[in-house]
Length: 616
Image 1: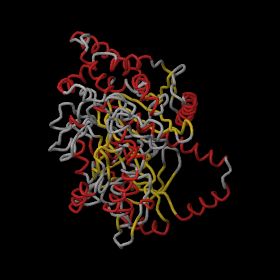
Image 2: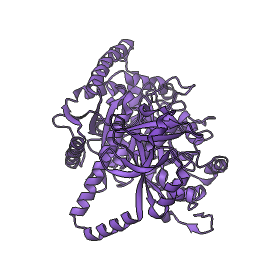
Image 3: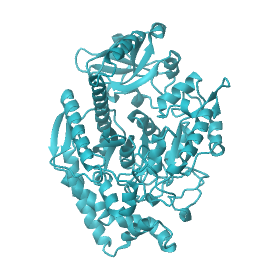
Image 4: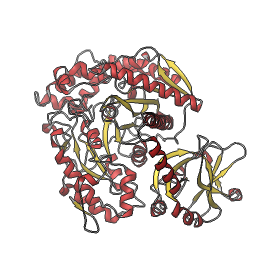
């Protein structure tokens, strides 16, 4: 166990099981926890879960300590991931720690961090270990590793999903706040769905892949698993961007979260599989109803579309010459070390050496895929496609008995994504059966990541409302709950912030000093302009317009009323606290600006968020 600053001991049970960025930052700022304590508990938890085969290089205090020591040179206010523990899939380099790709004979010890890891550490994050994976990132089941098959976080007899198995389970088991995976055909999304997590896959090249053992280098993405989309997007903001030494990286700007004009749903019956196929089908139909309900409420058009295009594109990946790209990278090692790889992995890798995959077949597939990309781009114009992340799951024993067809099923709704240059986010959508999570994935074209974020936030909020309604309908102490909520409402107020008081910015500590806590990301009604005031440091001003205006991205915090008066009184003109209208029509207290300040200020309304005006 670790120790508090005041000398009291803290146990693993006292630390939240569901670790989030906002929770740890709040505790660090208040002095209620130290990173040293958190890391000690993480080591304890990893030892307790040792039989789940989560780690290849497990957390140890000796390995973590240099990163803890480095925090003394960083300011919590200036480092958005200060003291935040994260896990790294063991096909991604961490300097001084072996990269195995789940094959001990292949292992090497890198001198440098992978591009994404380097950026995370610079932002204050602490790498705690390297996680298990389907060997050479070949598989979607999490049962193809000589280090053991990683158990599902909720039901150990079920698969965890792959290939980023250990990364997802480490988050779900409370051993890190977020983890890095990779995604070529769905490995950053399938494990999220099976372990009740968010899995965010940015556009191809938006995150550097320097220092990643390639599966298919032209398609590989580094991804993040977290408990919330908000946490995933903080990670995205830190690691996104061109890397000078990465030939695959490119400049893809994530636009502010917004809503699509259309939501696309598959027409006709979808296929479901595994021992819970019926339950998965029912969960999908329920998710469809939730998507329809929230879309209708927001005025978003629902369209049913034929998804055969996506199935045809998916077939190119593992039934076409792209398997030769994987063989081009790993083949020399397999040829030099026959019989060393996991048997099913070696069989799959060797398929890439088939004589049929000659140069002509590659170009034929490329030309066919280019046509599919054009069709997908037309279909997805200002739209988001919603599909199940998985159509079912399997027990670990079933996968080991039939490793090929079970794995193929797991990629039915994921394999098309990178081939078609789409971005995607996988989000939880309830349980198919108790402790058996179901999830959906939202897809958009590469430059429209803001659409999948906005739509995902909308769906998650709608799903949470449905859960709340169900709990009330069940009659679980409804009257007592109402009284408690009223008491809470009488003691706190929501506050909308749009600038330096947001998470990661210098004045966040003022919010925390007032006892405020972050609630959610949101946006205003489309009635505001945003200006950059000529102050030092620069500050934003939100001004409500009689006509026109845009939706400005906000953060919603909850603050004790006893602190709110003093907080509001200290805000200097031309800023102040007024009523801010949110996109759902409700009003909450928040930062506003007097109209006269627009004269001489830079109009930055088009950027819609202070994070786009003054990036962290």
